[in-house]
Image (cartoon, rainbow, N blue to C red; front, side):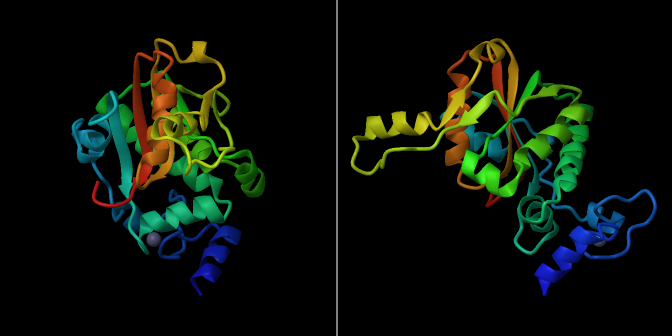
Length: 228
Ligand SMILES: [Zn+2]
């Protein structure tokens, strides 16, 4: 019956998203005890954290900072599911703000946040891009700009299996397109994603931005799955 509880939370959002306790005044989305139980990565305390190491081995990434550890059946999964499958865009903005506040207070600064775009067909089905919600919250707390139009996702049109390796990479690279390269050049860019799992999609996205001479590129994720 978890789907039912999740549904009830969407209809009656005055209960805690994770434990369904009634929220007290001043609490939003999560009750205080669940808020304190969030599985934080604390990546912001270590610029050379494991998440960063994973990407910086092959890419010149300035920072890689995820807010939560994605844990099945845990609070982090409930947040992600509410955001992705139950139209709870507010929880995305809120979690973005929580992460952004921590980063801002630690001294992290960015010029422009770019959420990883969805395929147009997926966007049409869901009605919104969950990474836009996170970026909006992050941008508010970090006092910076974000854009949902500068990065565009194209449909991969050809099958990739029969191509030579180099051609295959080229095809993958064109999945993401920068609509106005002048907006990238010389800026400290941060790509915003919801949950980073294998990292292959985000890797492609980072490469698309790195091609246009930003001052730096970083990765901000709501959650990271696995051991990172
Ligand atoms: Zn709770």
